[in-house]
Image (cartoon, rainbow, N blue to C red; front, side):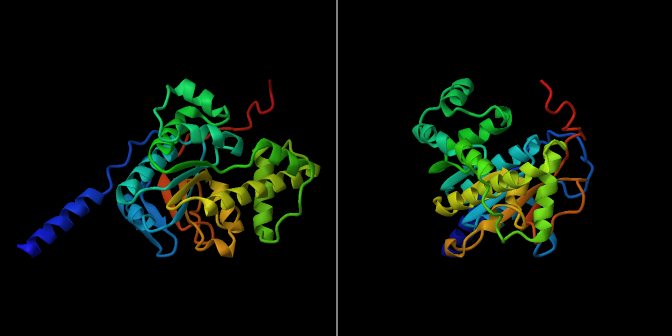
Length: 291
């Protein structure tokens, strides 16, 4: 009887921990691509189900998830992942690139309190309009209600401005290829309107943001999960590159990746690459800088 009871208990536990069905896809491109919703394990060189990915990440003290900011499926998967990890073990901290240090007092004042309606919550948080609340609102609310802490992971505007005016030397941690990739990415993101004189300052800000994210993640209670843009999450370019040995094991990196976006990142960039549908192709520079 005791053996049977243990078997039944084990079966019940496995059923409880089984990952729920993934959210329905919101984006419209690459819906027929193979392996949607699965994650490529760059070390084992195999595809994992979403359930298997959750099981792998549940043992990591620190995880960073890299997103494409305007892909709704990326944010729905992030929330799904947080919920599934929470079901396996309590999540101590959620960190967000979208929050700056100046907002932390307001965040702390709302932690584990009854939350107001969306408009009032945005106002209390001084939520920055550059981050689409319809995408990030559910994640913010989860971070305020469930884990011990919701933490700002980005630099403040004054810190960025200081780096812009007096850019420090670029870290020797960057390889030649990494620096070239970052430079081209910054040039592309500014639609060709970033002159060479300002490029070192923008690189200094990028480096400072990644250093800040690494520092906040290292100091956060664990298990901790950081949400950031894909370039900030990458091992070869972003936050993990600035991880200090005294902080312990480097964070596990998950990149959310649109199907059809080119060759999958490898082990040098991420531990897992989670495949999603893609947004329709668009010209982000159309009308850039116009009133």
